[in-house]
Structures are given as structure tokens and as C-alpha cells.
Length: 393
Image (cartoon, rainbow, N blue to C red; front, side, top):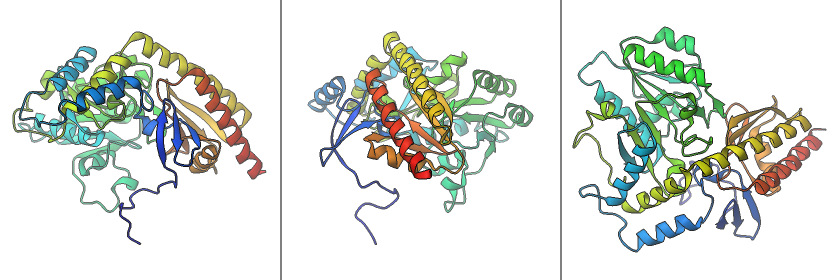
């Protein structure tokens, strides 16, 4: 049966009328503690006063003018990102998918004068978005089935398999695409040593390193970007989700050398970098990119890992492993338990979670959440786990 909204999602019959920090209030009045944050988007929670003020102030001035003109808010956000990262320059998009597609174009344009440089290395379990280029980069059957023929040039290795990467790297490799922490893939973290080895392998053959920090960036791990802990820098980085705090916004960050071929007319976006989105992004950066805020995320992440470790010990028949960093955490369930079941039972306890691959349930609360709210969420999760155990018995 056809519906007004194309049925590309299996939507839960639940809708919300307002949000308050880490809480969502449903249209029937029920309150839910939000450990999904719009899938790692709402880094400052719902209706954060600073973001409400930024949207309201900019909306009263100008929303959109197009990139035919200088946009002061865009320049402010670009300068903030350049000052805080490895990047020399930024291209703004509306989403992570657009950032991935633009990143693929950048890599191809960079090597346009060397037609032998066509190989792009990516990793199994990846998620880079839903465009044709992004699904080719990810490669998983769940994303690609029925959408062929796929964009050529991508080769896929097991996630984190450094010997396999080093064996395949040669002077035909244009770039390596990787998420420092896979989100959709099941909160799988690339060790610091592996990130360093990937950087070294790229340097050895002159390939570009493209990091996808759409989900793991913008403070989620307790660093502004997850790769910082390894002490390496990419040539290109894809950013979205948290950068807009809930407003559609994404970005491609690049070094001057990597971005050199991206001249006038080589790429564009009608809405990308619009004044409204960039005004919000500036406020997100001002709030998140401080030592106190990022330190608090690390502390809350440590607190959460302790609570989840105790939870796993209490429910060994359900929870096999606690994964992740900062406030990007996952529970890998034991074989035979589907993440969707725990998500459904937790929702009955007033807790919103997000499923992922590899039998993982994701916990992605707003970075502004309090320790008391984290403790309350763990208590609700404990009750949900207990309910599943009782049914199993």
C-alpha cells in the first residue's frame, strides 16, 4: 500500500512534540531519555538555549543567498574548523553523504593527471552514506544490492587488517577511506597503532588518507576528532552530524595540497554553507571545542563505561562486550540475541537506543548529558536486560 512518505524506513509508531536536553517528550506525554541523539547528531541535546538563540537570531536576518556571494557565517565556521584541525580549507555540505560524495570527487580530481591512480581502499563494515559513490565506498551488500552497476575503483579489506593493507598498497592507490570508529558497523574502534600504520602506508606510496568522522567526530570521543588521540592527521576528513547540533550541516576538510585541484566550477552545492546552518555550526564549535567541555565528555565516558561494565557482568547471558570511547559506546550482545529486541524493550522503559551491525546496540547520548542522567539511563537499561532474561528463562 502506497503511503505519502516513501517507506524506506521501518518507522517505530512513536512521535515527539518537544525535546528538553537529553529528554524527548512524546505526543502522548511520555518522557524518554534519549541515548540515540538523532544517531549522534544532537551533541548538545534538544532545544539547547545557545542553538535556539543562534537559529532565531540568524533566521531574523538571512537564511539563504547561495554560494554566488560571500557568506560571513560560512567564513567564520571555516576559520574555526581550520584553526582547530589539520585542515587548510573547508567545503560545506548539508549531510555526511554529500561530504562523502564530495570527498570521492576530490580524490579523483587530485589524481586526474595520473590515470593509473584509480584504486581506492576501503574497509568491510563501513558506512559512508547513501549516494551511489558512498555505497560503492562502503561495499556492503545491505547497502549496494539492487543499485548496480556500482562506481568502480573501490577495494575492500577486513576492518583494521594492517598486514592486508600494507600488502595491497602500491603506486596505483589513490586513497584510503576509513572511519576511526565504525558506527553503523558496530562501534568498532581502530587502535591508535593501526591509524598510524595506515598513515605510514599512505605516505609510502603517496596516497591520500581520507578519514570519515561523520559519526565519531565533533567531540563524541572526548577529542574534537577521534583521530587526534593517535597523533596523526589525514589529508581529507568528512564531517557532519554533530557539527550542526541537529541542523543539517556537513563539511569536507582538506589540506591545501589535497584541495588544490578543487578550483572554481569543480564542485558546488546550492544549500551547502548557507548562513543559517553555518551560524548554528559556529555556536556548536564555540560550545564543544573547549578543554572543559571535551574533558567532561571523557569523564562522562569513563563513568558510563564503568556502569556498562557492571551491567554486562550482571547479564552475561545477554551482553558479551562493552565497546567504544567517550560517549560513542556499544553493547555487543551474545549470539542469538538481536539488537532490535533490546532496543524495543528499552523503549518500554523510556530509554531510546540505536541498533547497529555485529549484534551491537549503540549508546550515543547528547554530549551535554549529566552524570545523573547517564546513571538513570543505565538503570533503565538494566531493567530492560532483566526483562529479556526473564523471557528467555
